[in-house]
Length: 205
Image: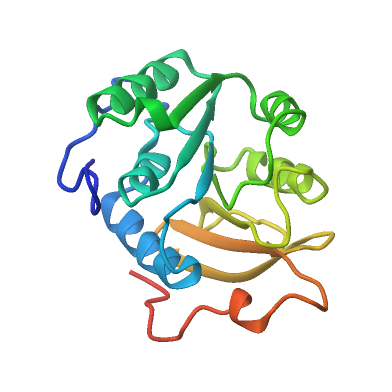
């Protein structure tokens, strides 16, 4: 597990001893961030929320690429410790914060204090319905707005609805047993370019 690009490019992250923690594979992460660069146009001044953070793999990659802030949520003590250690090791501790809480209570807590995030990662344990619960909560939360991008990683064999009120899936990519679903709040005023991924970016790996 490594940082692919940016200021910490090539640096290896501390890995979990607990097999319950499932980091996103490097090949999937590389494909995902290639897509994010196209959608977001870059990560400068981007505020990131990494839910079910594990090692912090996704949020740390965003920080390396220039994100201004990342908040990490996980209820596992080993995960929280790993994220904190990786933040310090990569010299990102001043731009990262870790919450050791269950996802929904943590989101309620943040909703009382934070402005909307530009990018939200949801990477829960597979096949437990957790992504669906978080997406349903975010659909009406102040933690996202019409400019926010929400990315959910699930098992490719797992069912995930494509709409949670105005929060709609606009693309999905499959990488072996992993699927990445992209969501935005979509309404009549949403520009078409915000809900399109160019066809020349791979759909499968």
